[in-house]
Image (cartoon, rainbow, N blue to C red):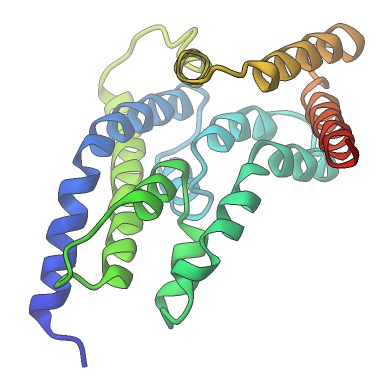
Length: 232
């Protein structure tokens, strides 16, 4: 039986590591909650969507999916493409999650970019149980997101302002991430392939249907490139 001191130590370590994430998640979550309220959804929607979907970019996209014609196949493929990176996250965490018992299913469900980064790279003190540390990192990050989403929705009942352009917050976030990765990497081939494939599919398929073909084209180009490099 694990001691309360061990669990408390893991919680304190996780809290320190996740506090910077808290600020960003609260802001983005409140933007999401405001946007949901502006589109006519009651607070229960952002509450349960942030609890059971817990995929920030997909939750923003889901707003338009809920308001558009029912198309489950398109929704499934779009969700798969947007969150396909988690397949690679999961593979890299197989050893770290081994033997964690009941914590493992939640760690798999709750993995987001930020939780993956902390759990994968953090060095915890020897007296801190790593399983509990990863569990609290994941739990705290989700609590931050849910709190932000619900707060934004509730404040939407009190504050009224023009929310036009608020859904651009995720686009702005990805632009910043793109610029940071461009600056930190000397090899820009992947960024150029992604940009070129997206622009080509946007021109061919239009703004409403270009995402899935663009992702498929990117995967195809990378697969052919990897095959060529393996044969050379």
